[in-house]
Amino acid sequence: MYIKSLNFSLWADFIERDYLEGEFKELINKKIINGATSNPAIFKNAILTSPAYKEQLKGLGGSAKDKYEALAITDIQKAADILKPLYDADDDGFVSIEVDPNLCDDSEGTIAEGVRLYKSIDRENVMIKVPATQAGFKAMEELSAMGIHVNATLIFSLSDAISCARAFFKGSERAHKKAYTVISVFVSRVDRLLDVRMKDASLSPGKLGIYNAARIYNIVSTMNVPKCRVLFASTGVKGDDYIPSYYVDELIGTACINTAPVETISAFVENGDMSEKLPLNEEEIETFLIKVKQAGIDFDTALSELKVDGLEQFKEAFAQILQELE
Image (cartoon, rainbow, N blue to C red; front, side):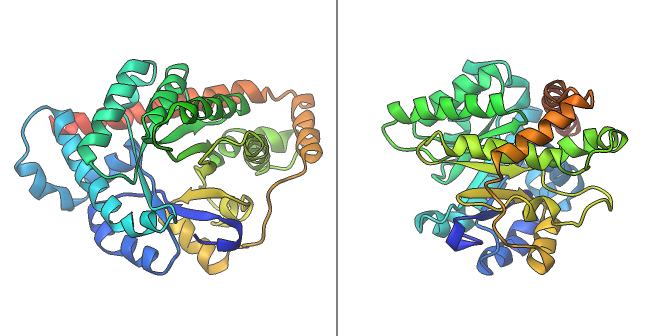
């Protein structure tokens, strides 16, 4: 736990084979991170750019997806083994792997693949990532009911976050073994999409992503879903508009997680503001969102567009991996 008094965790949003053997272990030993996340884009960059995968690839047969899964599963197993002592000590110790993003509208396919990946990886401290779609909500409930840890991902709107929380609550009621779950709220992408429009409307940039995430944190925290926490994702900064640790500094609260790029974590450890910021006042959040609406910014539509775009980005990254592995 990075800030033990708050039960606040830092996870690394990065997986790559050589990194797992070096810096990853160092960050864990220094008690900086206690978990890790991955997604198709992260694996695309790792598999297609790092020489660490070439040797294993030589001995792999089967389809392109078979090869991808063999590579990804090896990395996830390695990360899970390194993190297992933390998991055993009830200090998180989770690593996440995402189901095929092309299954985002197929609940039964997502459930089947989630179960298959969990069994293939064969590590108790693995979380299966499922995107926040209508099909995904059903899959989240079923997987968590089976006692499989689940990371609900690509969450931008409060309504999607509530749907995830309800799915996990229903799953927990049926579970023979309690599953740990997280609701991953994407933050910086909101500001990257809308900052220019916010400035044009004489409203503070860099605030919408924070207020939106804080509102979700406030509401989900009141739902009392067993073993479920809010995780803030997409917390890296692009460009020089904000300090590198901005989206970590502004979202520190009780019983939540921030998964961030390694360079963002380094900036936070070196110069970050570790004071508690959450929960934010509900009236303050609502006042700001009213101003956004009055400025003619359709925030709900923007959040829907971000989810669609996020799904497409993951599908494209997955397709590029498979194309290169053909």
